[in-house]
Length: 308
Image 1 (cartoon, rainbow, N blue to C red):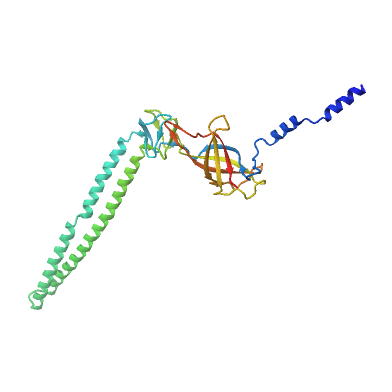
Image 2 (image 1 turned 135 degrees about the vertical axis):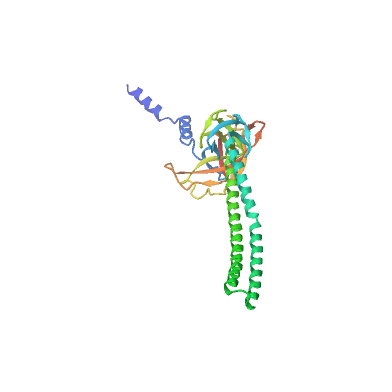
């Protein structure tokens, strides 16, 4: 038994390079690495992510009369995606236009003002004539006083007419604003794309009833994306800041040797450090469309290499 035990101990004491090397590789898997020659810092857990993704909502209540998109379509900002029945809203706009026109006519009507001015001239002339007659003793004092007061009343009528025109102008401004509000409300019956994007999902159905906030479609922006990753805060303190030049590698295939290289800079550095002593950074990248497809897609594996 003793030779057998000695042999086992000797076997256990022998070095096993292959096992030791594999153990080292596993312990460093997924950790950021720094090149000994260049001093590059590589962020870990990097992935392509979406910057803007929104469920485009309805803003008013009504029946969907038109759907102008399909899933997988690429749309531009401002493109009409759907139309809600706007019959009543159109009537409302026409009513406000008529009220605005009436208010404009009142605001520009100076007939009463001209009549007041003419009446004041006539009353003032009569008062002057009566004053002459009074000096000659042809009329009593009260007759002269009556004409003088009529002339003063004419001045007040002019002021009243001018005030009425000013009020009419203010009313016209109010009706103009009401018409603009009605037109703005009418636009809400046409649901448009808030930015250039890709229709990922269609929620609405033709002829369906929607409420304010009901999602119509999921719109994803693909012309601009970002690559997010984590930096070891303890290993590289203060070495990665906003504006730091970086190289971004995006892996579009399973082959890690075939990566798309993009130059950029750090656009965001998180102020928080997680429980693993890492903070988040991301780099904004431009995407290109090839036919109906996009070169880079969210979810692709990537790398952020911080330049020394």
